[in-house]
Image (cartoon, rainbow, N blue to C red):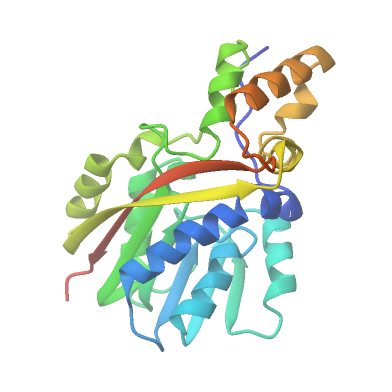
Length: 262
């Protein structure tokens, strides 16, 4: 099999099955850690189908949220969720945000920075649009140390000699890389935290549909029947089930926050 195609998020409903439960679990820990007061203006960069944006509205009581993502289908899904809520949805590039400087009280990227081709440019754009004294924060799956929820799938594909698509900027998920970048951009009061979460699937079929069939890499459609059957066998053998058939998978993310200099 040739080199994997880049990961593309073109199906909001599939993403809901695949990553939204993970995003809500890690996002809850993330927002509790940020502990920002109600009534602030936020920008959610790389908002996808709005899973984290929903959480932000529920937990942080913002005065407004501007949510942006490059994927038309993802934003279309998000529009269905926020038709009557204070959310401005836009299609755009994290490396060239269409917002004025010093506009927001808080700028966040939830599970996005490692998908940005130039993480430094993406982070610098968050800093640019944040008010002096405002918060700039991000969390990503800890890919380098195997913390992503897709790690079992990736490892079994690797074992079968089938290359799995990874985020293009995986190295930025390291704590050392994040801290160096936030410091380089002049942010103050920099703190980091590991976010550890888990997700329980009803049974292996639930796991297979959620984490394999719904994967934005579209890997199942690229496998032969024999390859797909062998991947199922390997994953089912790898993931222990409870007496009731439930499967619990753990993941961890690296989070960072800092304040823009006043």
